[in-house]
Length: 265
Image (cartoon, rainbow, N blue to C red; front, side, top):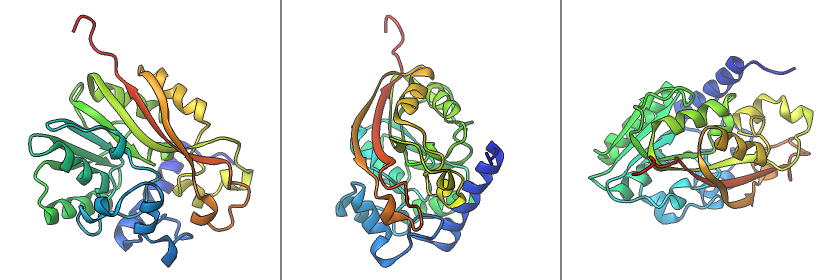
């Protein structure tokens, strides 16, 4: 049975609230929570270095990513960065270090518990150039044409309205600015039992779409030069129990795209 968008949103929101409140250091469903799948090990698997993980406040890395958008964003001093689905602040804090005191990072998350945790981490780490706002990524609490780089890590696939997410990202970016995200996409259809699984929804699987469709949604929102920068297998079998049939259906991709510059600028 196909779930409505609001039901999906509640499933995801409740799952990540649980992560924030209980401090679970891996996927919200809990099925991957074993010593071998600690937040640190998961983050290493998807591309973070020890230096990255040691550079942020303790408790900000929950091992929820599927790639490292900050690594490909080519962030510059003084830029304003928006992190979609910022969680406990891991990528936002890494971005803040790269844009420096003259730059700014805004994290948006729909889960009050995550926002509370991220703000506490920012205070603990004394990040004066980072702020976290409660809101939906389908309706961003951010001004038009105010952002230099939009980043996101394994979050857009959770949205039941990805087209709206990309349109919102396009709206808030300045002309000529860029989108750099890591996400999960499908290379083949998921088995029905997984597609309808609550665990898989919260674990970023059931909401994933085909790679071509993902890129098409970015282009449809108005972006130019949407392309996959890198692609790697996602260890579904290591991250979840009882998801046989999905092992080779999901890949992690890093995608870049640009908002067109104003003509004559």
